[in-house]
Image (tube, rainbow, N blue to C red; front, side, top):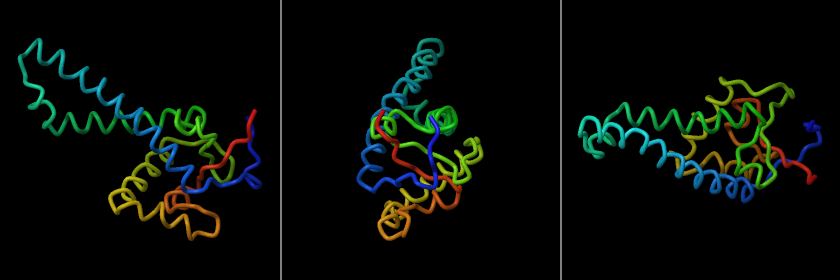
Length: 149
């Protein structure tokens, strides 16, 4: 489905947050499964306690890679996660080109910094003339509302 980027509507903050909440629930479930994939075999084969595995820095990197893979995979394949699809949102590049892994990773890092700063980047979108966040501008990409049908 082609989107007229020039005339596409940027979603308001509540719609963005709704999609983020939906995806957060999905990512939480995915992390439970990803963690179980580590704990069950390591616990059964080597008797390693789940708490030891949870506190290992490599485990944290693995779980971070799972989260990043979730977003990057969905964004590069269609520009939308399941939460975004539910709220009819799509991530597009400003020039209409395909989303690359570099753009996806940069966008995730910038959004993570925003959340670490109490979501200031998302609040900024309330005052931005185009309702864009800093990570939208930084990556030359943005969310647009997809028309029904």
